[in-house]
Amino acid sequence: MKIVLCGAGRVGISIAEHLATEDNDITVIDSNNESIQKITELYDVRGVHGIASHPNVLSDAGISEAEMIIAVTESDEINIIACQISNLIYNTPTKIARIRSREYLNENFIEIFQDGKIPIDHIISPEEEVASALVKQWRTPGAFDVAEFCQSSVTMLGILCNEDCPILDTPLRQLIDLFPDLNATVMAIIRETNLIVPRTGDDVLKVNDRIYLACPTEQIERTLTAFGHSEIAARNVTISGAGNIGLIIGEMIHNISSETKLTFIELDKEIARTAAEKLEFASIISGDTLDPEIIKEARVVNGSSFIAATNHDEVNILSSLLAKRSGASHTVALINQPAFFPLVNSLELEAVVSPPVITVSSILQYIRKGQIEAVHSIIEEFGEVISVEALETSPIIGKPLKEIKLPKDVSIGALIKKDKKFYPPRGVTIIEPGDKLVIFVPVKSIKKVQELLSVRLDYY
Image (cartoon, rainbow, N blue to C red):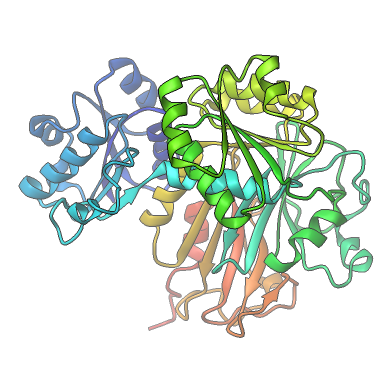
């Protein structure tokens, strides 16, 4: 597929990394020469220097032959105009744009993107999705990563194995004997900087391993307990940052649990005033979240949760550390820069949410629509957890799992059959048309997995 990608920032680089491995012909547009040089050195893509909304720049990028434009520059307006021009002049079939301003997405004006008025086929709204991810982390304090698949019947959990994990040094195959009614399957283990994909059942868990597993959504609490986590969602939540994301978080938590006490800390007095007007159910403190006295005033105490959602990674990390020192039992930090992820893990902060990773997951899910139904990129960039439907035409149909030649770095975490029930993967399990599979896949193996799900040579 020929794709024009507008924007070579963090999101653009991640998209290029994923799509360049899938035999796509990608041209990247950016107004920063250094960004263009960086992305073309890293990946097999062509670079064009210029403003993505300019017709001549789009033309130089080959938009007339492109099947898709993905506009993820830092400017909503450039993203919108790039899609508009691509459609108007070049009739580009598929147009995807990142739009961050809530003003464009206001329910009173959202119709401008409907019925072809502004021809964007898929809008990525990171703030809504990021806020939702932060709230999921609050609701699941024992996990550092959470994602739902197959109409929320399957949940992926990222869990840190600490010293309280009761199954350390135990072969994974013994989980069935230890917890016979628990349908959790470990799909991937990250040990320091190494990825381990358990396939034989002989692998064991070590202290500080970060594992990704799939379980039935109704067994989340039990699964976490089995791996040494019995934390519960706090009813006292402090949110650092009362901007757009903070406001959405507050509204979501209040709708889920109106008895939860919400306190916001916001440095900008005007933003704090606006938040106080919109969130009558919350307490708003105007002050510096890095000031220990402000943290104390916000009553960050034992058993409380702290969500750091400002626009500054460093502030989110440091304020989370202050909150931990003040007694917060659970912290969630919004982090944009991938370079900070290892630092956060070493500081023993419970969870991180990455807007670029969430944005990339949303875009990939739309691009790969078809047999791949959902995509969740793992924050360490080791791979993706995806859900797929087994089509009648696929070569895996009618075969037990033990006979399917999956790449060695790919693992199946769960199956949902036509009866809508959760089935843990077993060697004798037969794949039938319509089965939904939840799979861990490294980026480099996505193409191989897609081939397994394609038409059999003997189908016709």
